[in-house]
Image 1 (cartoon, helix red, strand yellow):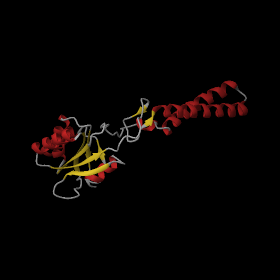
Image 2 (tube, rainbow, N blue to C red):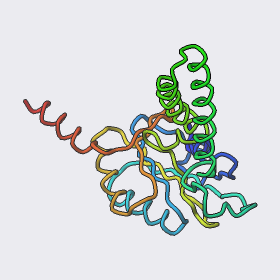
Image 3 (cartoon, helix red, strand yellow):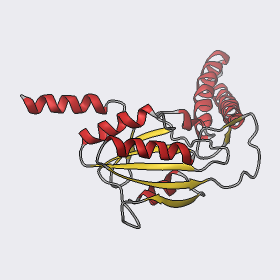
Image 4 (cartoon, rainbow, N blue to C red):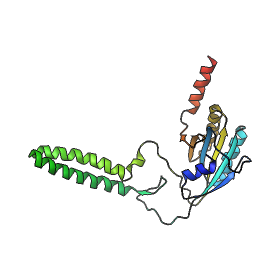
Amino acid sequence: MTIVEYAAQQFPSHKIDLWVDDGDSNPSLVEHSVVAHVIGVHDGRRLIAAVEEGGSNIVVAALVRPPAVSADPGAHVDRDGIVDVSTRRIWLSALTSGLGIGAIATIVTLVINRSVLTSVIVGVFLAVLGAVVGATIGGGARYGSERTSQPRANGEDIAVIAALCTSEADAAGVVSIMRELQPHTLRLVDAAGSWHAPQNIEVDVLKEQNLRSL
């Protein structure tokens, strides 16, 4: 996957330009790529300079130009996502699903069992399950696990910068350099574009080096 393809995948419906290349007109990611999303060209240049000064890894970058804002999302919107989703929609989905399923379950149980207490217990239980399912379908799933978010740039360009490292140890060094400049997003990305957060990469590298020294 190229740096431009990766940026387009992470920022759909945005204009993507190749910003920094390695002599290749369409530079590709490698197995040990460290990728940062940085708001603003100035801060992007600072991060590129720091990585180039700190090692011999090739650095490539794409520039993401956000589209013009067509509407103010308002105060009751979850802004930290690829798509703005109203948080009110999640609550409404949970409420309507819970009440609907709970009412149906209560009526059906009452008809079959003729016990008010049993019908209420079954209705409440299924109402809770219905509310959870409804909230998830209505957009609540975005709060589960590790969220994929987009930086809010307020009209600024977003630099997607990749250091193409030759080993995990090199990647750990680049992660340390980039962290000092506090990019919005920092990831380890492979050649296919799959990524994970680099929480414990330095610890993993030290363990591997210790095992090799035994």
